Structures are given as C-alpha cells and as structure tokens.
Image (tube, rainbow over all chains, first blue to last red; front, top):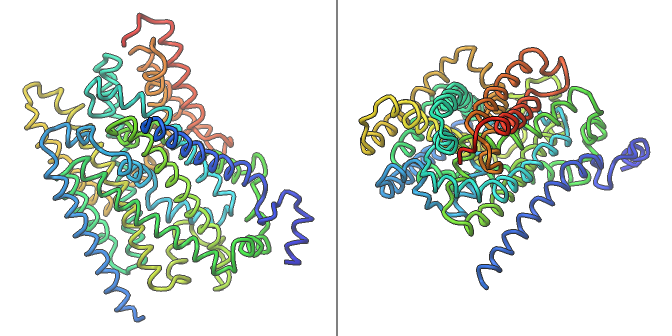
Length: 51
Length: 481
C-alpha cells in the first residue's frame, strides 16, 4: 500500500481503484453507459407493450 | 489429481459436450422444413436466444487465448477494447437491427450478399460480395480451428489434429442438420458456458492477488504501465485504439454478425436481444482482457516473466500453472464453446453464400429442395475441409486472417449503412464503395499499416467505403429502392 501511495503521487492519473482514469473514462464509462442505454430501451419497450 | 485423472476428466467433458451438441443438431433438424428455416431460421428466432448467440459468435477462443495473452503485456488498458464492444452491440441492435430485419423480410433475403443484391438491384454486387466473403472467411474459419486445436492440445495433451477433427465433426453434424436454428441454439448454450468460464477465471485471478484494488497495486508495483493508458502515438496506443475500432465497430459489417441481428422474429425480441447482447458484450471481454492482464503478476509469483513469452502461449501456461483442476476443466469447456460458437456461424454463413450466391445463379434450374441439400452438403464439406487445411495450413492462411475483419468491414460498411439510411443509395455507389473500401484497406495494409504509421487499415478503408458509396450514389442515376 505504501508503495502504491508513492505511485499514486507519482502518477496523478491513477484512480482510487488503482487504474488510470483514462482507462475508466475512455473505456469503462462508455461501456457501462451503453449497458444502461440498452436497459432503458428494453424497459421502455416492455412498458409500451404492457400499455 | 494425477495427470491420468485430469486427462480422463477432460475427455469426459469433451464427450459430454459432443453429445449435447448432437442433441442440438437433432432438435434443429426437426424445425427445418424449408430453405428459409435453414438459412435464416424462418425469421422466427427469439430475442433471448439471439442475444446470447450474438455475443457467442462475436467472441471466440482467439479472445480467450490470443488477445488475453496480449493483454498480459498491455495491462488493464486492454479492457478499453472490450468495453467498447458493448457500445457496438447497442448500435447493432438499437440502430441497425430494426431497419435491417425489416429489409431482410421485405426482400426475402437469406444471405448478406443476397440482401445487397436485392436492395441495390445488382447481380455484380452479389457475386463480388460473395467472392470477398469466400476468400476471407474460409481462412478465418481455418484460423479459428487452429486456435482451438492448439488450446486443446496444450491443456489436455492430446495431438493437435485430434482437437481440430473433434470440433469439425461435431460442428458439421449440427450445422448440417439444423442450419441457423441449430447454430443459434448451440450458440445459446455455448454463450452461457463460455461466460461462466471467463467470469470464474476473472474472479479467481483477482482472489489470487488479494482482491480488486490490491491486484491493481500489485500490477503497478511490477510495472506502472500495467495500470496506465499507453502514451499517445506509441505502438501499444495504436494497437489499443486500432483494435477498439476494428473489433468493435468493424463487427457491425461482418456478414456472420449481420445474419444474427437481422433475422430476429419481432421488434420486441430485438429489444430483448439488445439487452442480453450488450450485457454479454460488456461482461465477456471485460473478464477476458482483465484475467489476461492479471496473469502477469500471478505468473510472476511462479517465477515466470510473461514479457519473454509468445502471446499465444501465456494463457495456456497460466491455466496449467495457476488453476486448480476444476477451473482448468471449466476453462477448457469455455474454450471449446467459444471456438465452436464462432466457427459454426462462419460455416453456416459461408455455405449459404457459396450455394445461394455463387452456385445457384450458375445453375438456373435448381429447385429449393436441391438447393437445401446442396447447402447442407457444402456445409459438411466446408467443416471437414477447413479441418484438413487447419492441420496442414499454408502460410497464406495467416496473411489473409490477419486482416479479415478489416477487409470485410472496409468492403461492406458503406453499402450496408447506406442501404439502410440513404434512400438514394444505388448500385453504382454500392459497387464503387465496396471497391474503394476493399482497395484502400489493402493498399494501406501493404504500405502504411503499423508500424509504418500508427493507423490501422480499418480507418481509411471504412471511411473510403462510406464516403464513396454516398458520393457516387448522389451523383449517379435515380434511386434504386
């Protein structure tokens, strides 16, 4: 952990989970937003079908 | 557990798998009564089955072994490639599938080439696209057989040819019997097994390193580049960006993928498939790229430096070195499922294309019944022929496979997208776009591909295909559809 704190201060792009923010913002966020969008589209189609 | 018991367990798993797939072939055979049933499942395949079949086809053993092995060197930045697959799945099902499935039905198209031909009213387009598919998909299928045979022989210890022939024989049986019905049903089962396998390995890898954050700290301690995004313009940067585009957005114009998202039974089922396909397209590659990256610190504990190994050897070594027997067996089952679920889609699509788009037009008197028989026969010949080529592969196979996805997406992206979204798109535009995309991807690959420049042939190829299809359609003739 001490080593890690040293690395975090040296590489300011590291997020609290120990991965570069660029990886999270450039990959993980778009991926989970895609999944959220898919869920919304599916839920709306179910609601429309029920009505 | 002794080696003998391990081998016995592996063989039991393989035998069980073969029996299960034979049963799928038998089930599919009962459902096939017309040529449409074999080619496009009679447009009756449901959303849940197709959603899983989609990502099972999308991700092969090459991701579980090859790309995951490369990820051990690239680090966690490789997960960026995987996460964008979910975005591509959303585009496939939310944007393209509704229009494409409607168009396939209205035109009564049963293959990708037939769709292009009927939409644009051009036989040339049909022959040209079918030829491109045959030339590039067959080597791609062979390479998938090679990946599977290598993985099985490394993990189980059986001869390479045995793994290839086992896979080829079983795929031949169920694709021959039930066409798209059997293929998607098999892919449904395969998709579930392969997802359980990669998620189990993913969770196991994190647990070996003491948890989620601790694992990243251990990676950073070995090499900070394992947890950071590569610097702009470096070789790794261009690989990550290139693969994100090719494997993500390039998928949209792959004929075997188009057949999956264009043949769903209803709009409601498209929405169901959207959710399931997106979930699978996020979870599976995230897990595979992550365990690949985590394999580096885990293997380091065993005194193995992955940077000295060939990418393809890293994951099999990881399995043999660090996994308990139950996880090795599960992973082997996952590899077989991932490989066969991709290969069956390629065999089904290529057999259909060869028969319907190349052989049938040459033989004008062919009845539907004869055509169905011939397609089944060609699927059988293709399965076994690809096995034999895989056992004795010529060097050209690797050269063709290396850029299959890039060539197919560069050739077809323009004609496909414009067919759906530009009413004035015509045959001149589609043909010009296909030729421009194909040629520019080829030329870029020969002269300007990495390492000469950091840009993959996919980018100029797809751009040329889209722009040329649009411009030539705009400035030539009346609309065709």
